[in-house]
Image (tube, rainbow, N blue to C red):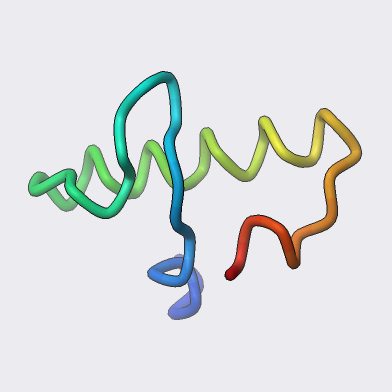
Length: 49
């Protein structure tokens, strides 16, 4: 996992990513958010704020 993944902020499926305590679930949500943003042709700068 990229060390900059911790920069991902926002909600994924109604859950605030930075509030997830379980490290594995947080990583899964980070990947889910990246896939969602890329599928919408969104810039990564929007995700990595």
